[in-house]
Length: 178
Image (cartoon, rainbow, N blue to C red; front, side, top):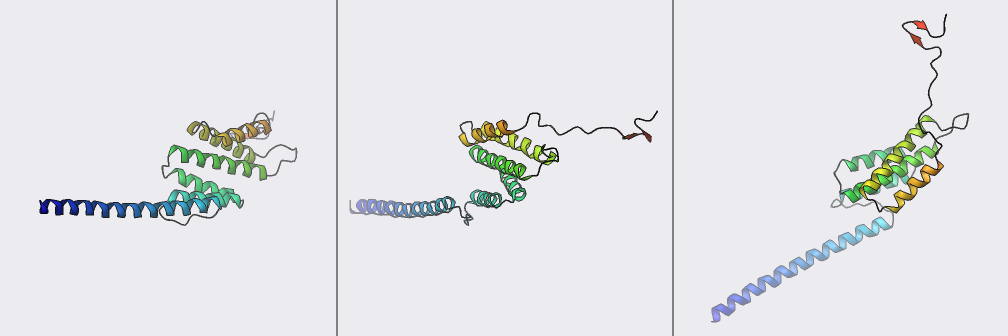
């Protein structure tokens, strides 16, 4: 009977040690997550290698916030290649739409007051990004708002201007000659 009690004591002691180790590990994970969340909320770059998506996302966000929309778009596109979850994809698509819309709004207008072709292209791509974000996460209110705002502000017929073909040569014969 004494051996049996010693066996139970040993078993329960090992279980208590395993529980203490597990509790310590979970506490460490909780502290790491809390630090990451506080960095994100403060708008700082995430410097933890255990969270590569969040780190890359914040770097791309900071690029867009600084006005470097081209590099921000490249970073967001690289994030999509890492196969994130659908919710993460929706956030990335939403931010792609934001950067494209801001990039389009920074472009100058043509002499006649119309949008330049680059701005039209950026706006059409922003629309696609917002729609993709809504397909992935239909309840995304910010994406709905930005898409509706963009659609209300856009001029009708977003297609690029058609170029006139006068003076274009076909088979070395200019068009318009008798």
